[in-house]
Length: 212
Image (cartoon, rainbow, N blue to C red; front, side):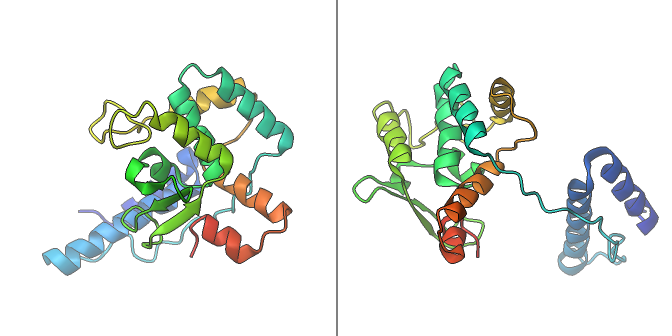
């Protein structure tokens, strides 16, 4: 029997070992699973994760400044796997989520209008997103299309048909660039901070990053 005390202990342990964010998400997942079992499958039990107080989470504000971006782009030039390097470049140039970039398909790209349409099925907001492609991003796509192997911009010999395991590559490139505490998701924050510095309105910044 899973009781509330056990979930509390798990929450505390994960918080110590992996931080508050992951600990809180684990408890949310347990609660969601339990509610599904009660409502859909007729489980006669009380949710042991209900009303557990989450750890306080600090908002992350890390983004790359000009000098750090220069080092990052230099490290990308030195990366032996240029397919992976182009993937990380597009993260920076589009501000899109890594899952959307890794699964980017050729039929999502409008080369005439220089736009990328992310289908609603892949968008976190549940709505179709159309992102303009800046020249640097567009040039990457034109170059990669000349050697396209399948329907994906970043193909791989995987079940999905596109690249999936890129965290090790990111760690390698960040180490080469001598950057500390930089995550892939910080590419989105970096684009947003650059747009803000250029005087872009908050609604436009939010729309370009797919925020509702």
